[in-house]
Image (cartoon, rainbow, N blue to C red; front, top):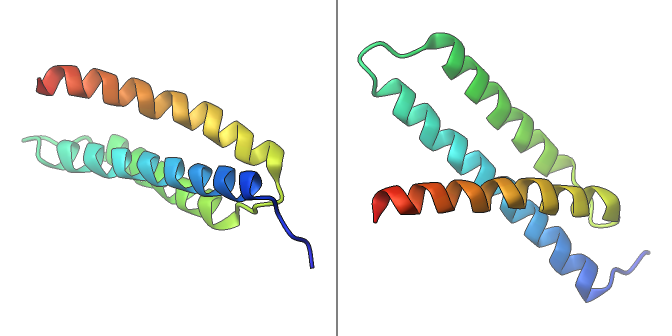
Length: 92
């Protein structure tokens, strides 16, 4: 049985968490769109599809796939940081 290093395990958990953050952002966007007087059905479908894709990506992620873990952390991490910076500035 393959054993992973603590560093690999932490990176994997961080990747899973950043995917969860992405899913939460999409859930918020869905709620915002649904609250509009005239929700855009195409946008809602797109957001739901992306959230489902993210859930599948998270479910299929494996601790031993270091390249995918690194990609997710870099790509999605940058998106989440930018999103938070933009939305925290608005809330302040």
